[in-house]
Length: 473
Image (cartoon, rainbow, N blue to C red; front, side, top):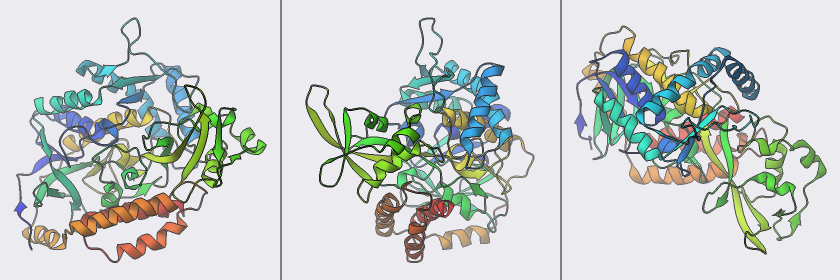
């Protein structure tokens, strides 16, 4: 059955995603080109995703304030980027512009933690324990509202209930002319635009155990790849240990002391080998696993004694005395990979820009704590500004192109749900960073499943997972 089709007037800039990066892009586009038509399409209204549906209801924003701090930031970020791809020019831009973006949030009334003087209190950051460059803000629902209200006050159109399924173009790699989206009533919306900013988030929500926040589709990288965009660092997710089922953070380095023990399958404590202890002395300096770092030996030691889904049994001293047993797992969090971009967020595909978890290069395999929030704001703003001011004509969508894309669209809710369930368990079983080649076990089952499905969002989800697995192979 042919879905109901809507074709609104063309936009100058179409932003896909209403997280930090998407709203920063929309605001910058409207401020750079007053009177332009800017549409923000997102699957749901209100706070969602890693940006605004963070289970801890707070985010860190790394914003060096002095020349010396910016130099330190760049040195640390470049070192952490290995073994991934990191662009020194993008890192410098991030260091130079993060403070201004933080000040914009302050002006909007975002709820930063403040010191006795009323200034934002500065904290150390993961992978940079001696620094004091990161501010923290909470009440993320309020942060979403003030950012979204700013976009609306500038004339931007917020369009919730629209889930991107593909980008409109004559062929992969050709100029992007807009996007095809599902609407909340199971219809299709053809959204023509002079430029598109991809800010759809990363793949973490596809994992069984994740901290991605509600509302993530996990399809962003699959959509970018289908459009012909060059991607990098897609193997590098951020991984956090957490208790189950609460998903409250668990410091894996607590195993260094006498108050916590890893248990084997028979329920007996497993001593921490001296070699693992010696390699992992810096592990308490950062919450996420460090890709390529020696202290990841501790994470892999725990994973070696976990079950097939990466769930480990822990015994620890209880706060009120005695002991408690609980389960802990390594949860997928925000990704470091995405489209390769230039300084203004341009991808390798004409008319397509990217920011947030849809872009990479400002960090590589790892990133400093608070640097993802800074990257969303800095490169979201740069992408939006460039998308709005780059001279180009409004798209001329031919009737044949629209007809072709609608013909290629298939929706099968049962197939979609089955694919999501399959991916959650396949990725959890074979996608954890147990070793450097875990992607090989994923490729064949993903490719086999890909050949059996037609639902467009299921295809995009599996493509995102394949891109992750290929990066690890």
